[in-house]
Length: 212
Image (cartoon, rainbow, N blue to C red):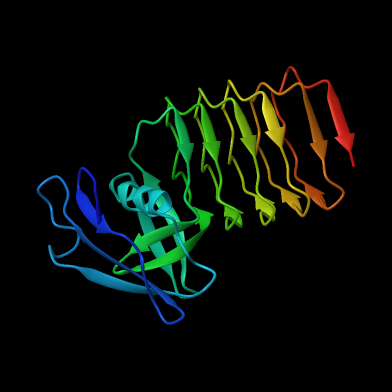
């Protein structure tokens, strides 16, 4: 049996010994991303993807541009989609292999005017400078557990952003990180050690800060 998608077909996963192997052919929009022959990938036991997850990761290659880190991690460098709601996958495909997405790079999603909601992967650790700057339709964010720093201007001028849920384990909120947002209240986890000046500048609706 095979899964037939718009750009590729994906045979079902094959188990060989302790390894899970996927075979697929992939071609999109007249531009070859992989040779039009089966490719095979071995996955360690903690990276077993369902067909739907695999489908999402491959389709995302049209909208995400990645930068590879020496530590076998990926940074999202840019995003070209126009989604209203976006789920960032935990793994990205880069030059024949899958790697965890640990960082959203500088200005990667800036000025994505249509984006209303985004779900972050649990693998995410870093949100870089201006990552979501000027996402004027963004309404709500919930940060995953491994994020340590929200960098300068990360969510500034997100004028529709009303709900911000910060993760326990967050340590630093940099300058102007949430400037100009529409939040009315926010909980600052006990793990936060540094809040730089003007982190919440021009948050004119902010009436309540909970330290816990």
